[in-house]
Amino acid sequence: MKRWRKSLVALTVVAMVGVAAITASLASAHSDRGGRVAATLSIMGFGTGDDVAETRAAIATKAVGGDVSRPAGSFNDQQFLAAVASGNVPDLVYLDRQKVGTYAAKGAFLPLTSCIKGQKINMKQYRQAAVNEVSYKGQVYGIPEFYDVRTILIDNDVLDATNTPIGWLNPAKPAQLLAAAKKMSKIDASGKVTRIGFDPKIPEFFPLWAKAYGVDILSKDGLHSHLNDPRAVKALTYAMSLINAQGGWDKFKSFRDTWDFFGSGNQVAKDQVGAWPMEQWYYNVLASSSPKVHITALQFRNLKGQPINYETGSAWAIPKGAHNTQAACTWMKTMTSTSTWMAAAKNRAEIRKQKNQPYTGISTGNAVADQAIYKQTYTSINKYFDEAVKKVLDVQKFSFGIPASPASAEFRQAWNDAVNRVLAGQQTPKQALDQAQKEAQSAIDKAK
Image (cartoon, rainbow, N blue to C red; front, side, top):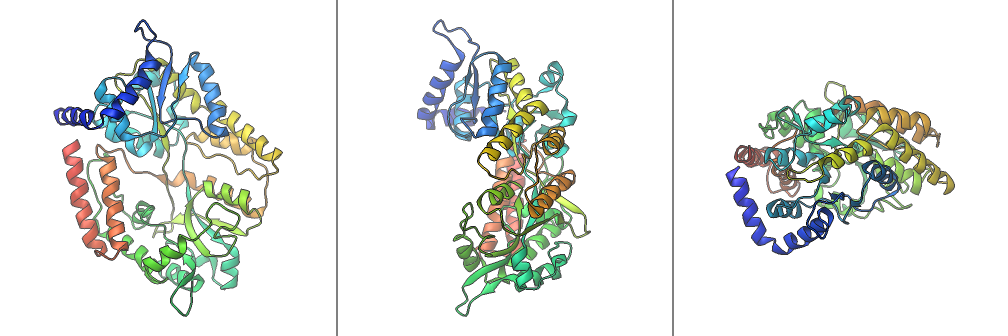
């Protein structure tokens, strides 16, 4: 704790401009002219958003019964630490779930025991993997919000044109998946990649590949790194073999960087990729930009043939020293409740209907809300997207996440950097993960 306080003091000096800005903003939110605490709920990391965010925010604001201050911008670690150091924290923060453990371990977030009990928040409604991400040493420090699901997205036209059996696109069958990647890829006479057969999506999805090979890269208590476990090394070695079989990283990435990812000329519409694992929100992008594409969604499977899903998402948390904790708790409960999610889903479905655009639903951390959303608001698009949405819903129960850790940011940086060193040809998978293991474990040991 002493080390933590010293670092905050140092940061206050370094980030004086940021402190001043944050302090001024939060002071106006917390105090009236007489210096008394006002009813304003100050939130960091949740500025004006899309229709889903604003529909729910309107309901939550009404539930709070007072003013709500939501400065623009996403959660910023340095700004938050500066606010903590200045002693003028926001009442509530909205951030990546993978960061919650670090702040909880440092005493910067409040455990939500009294909030959950006092407002009778049913934690069983939230997906367990998401709750695990915001729990540290047996206590809950955050309320889960959105929930990302990853499936393998397949371009059927590429599959058919290359006569590739769909059964080959299965991580449980490494040899066949490698053969499929080669069969569906295209490399011209000059060695230039013109189509990727299968993109393993690393470094981003390295935890998914490691899990497929049988290892959790971080222990359940968040205190022990397993980055250089032989199974993790094997997983990274295999993922790299997929890329090397399709021209190597430089050519592979150069071609991928040309994709019109969010436009009507995207890589699926142009048959520039055979398949790759991707978050569920991209089905909504495709449905809007190129609804006539022929796609299939497959569950990602481990070597035993069992479906798995690497989940991530956002959360709400209350900083230590917050003035309006009761209002913050009300906001969190309301924003993530089934009725609020349903209101947002119905509104989005209506907006899409008026614009004559497809609607693929909303994926939340609330399992009860998801069931209601897809039962009451989803309408058929076509057989391709309907089946994809069904697969997304089916795989949610097979989810895992990265446990809360006192050094979440450093841990993520360690494995991300390791994979990038391998991609750049600077180290072998074992060398890179050995280094990452030392870096990650050292960071955890210093932070706990």
